[in-house]
Amino acid sequence: MPIVRADIEATLSRVDADTLRLVLESAGVSPRGAESSRELAERIADALWWHYTSPLGYLADQTTLEDIVAYVARKVGVNGAVDANLDGWAQLAQLTKAMFRTLPESGVSLLDLDEVTRSKIEPSWMPTVGFGVGSGTSIGTGMASGKVLGWLRGPLGRLIPLIPPLAPYYKLLVGGLGAVRLVAWPLGVAFAVLSVNSALGANERKLVPLLLGVGALGPDPVREADIITLDAGGDLPDPQPL
Image 1 (tube, rainbow, N blue to C red):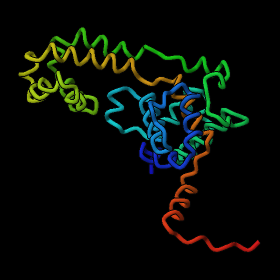
Image 2 (image 1 turned 90 degrees about the vertical axis):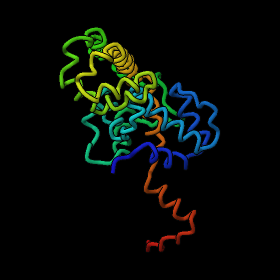
Image 3 (image 1 turned 60 degrees about the vertical axis):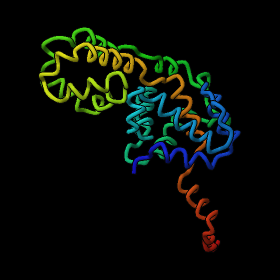
Image 4 (image 1 turned 90 degrees about the horizontal axis):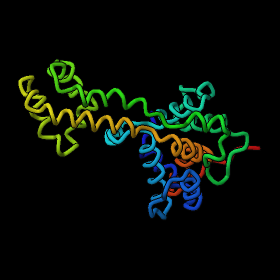
């Protein structure tokens, strides 16, 4: 089963608060006032999701740990060391071991990565071109095509109603092709918003150190589940013969 944000929070909440704080600070991510292990675990999970995806993708909340690990592994050039058939925690362990001979004990910073790796995670602004052009050319006959309505009914299009100024126009537009001309300029604004959204994609300079910092902790969900069971009054396992 894919590892989602709630799973990250539940597993990391079993880690000492000071250790989690070091993971955040080493990656250059503010704890934002988080103090307890639970709060810091939530902050780490939130930061992972925020720095991996775009604002609209963050709202959609369909990302998994497997998605993030696969992205970072490709970005730093060690995707061959990660077995996609394993769960996200196991993949993260493989990724971290592929990056470090000796695992860091107090979080991971950019300076802990070699120069070649750092050069691979520079931000790219090319994805903004597509939507940027769309915002300037969308107000025309092309916007009256079924392709636009298909896009609006897709995953990103369905997030437009979450942008308050555009919500009323979205409802008019998806009602039929005849409404397209009436809402041309707000649609142009929507594409401009998506252009900015695309520019605000993965922040790899924070994402990579933060993810590897979590990987260096070596969280083991199976072991954590055993601890939780014992805390709840479960029986100790029978001793095994030596």
